[in-house]
Length: 168
Image 1: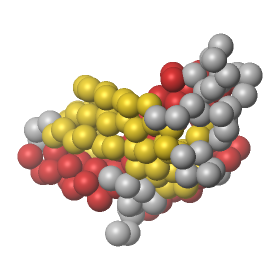
Image 2: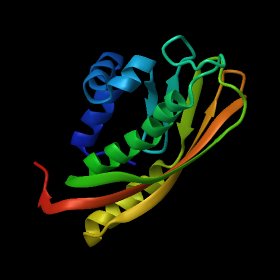
Image 3: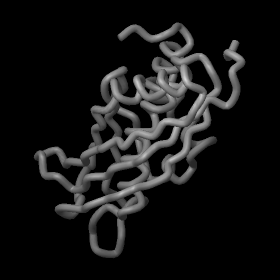
Image 4: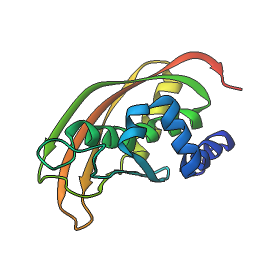
């Protein structure tokens, strides 16, 4: 899938570590503080991570569940933002449900991967065409470097065009 020029610019910008660092600092300071990073984003998937360390740990010597949730949300939310930018209309996006299950303790870098990009782009396109809200459930799975699954999240996003005027 080919992105619009605006969406490709956005994808390149958030893929730049310094630009992402600054954006996180301004828009999501808690994620910035915990060390959440966007590792890769395409139209098909998004990969994020959060390290285990003194800024993200809980008293039980593992990564705090909220730090894991921030990295997990970013892996789905970045796809939603990219698809909304590609649509060329202002979109209202909102998480309306979240489910999580935790496996092993996260005692190292936790990497989250969401492979729902195609479904996100389809849902945004349908919302743009109909002018009505669409919802989509996106699953993201967090693993450590050795492949151990530490968490699995499902975020349900609602997406609706704010107006019929194209962005310019």
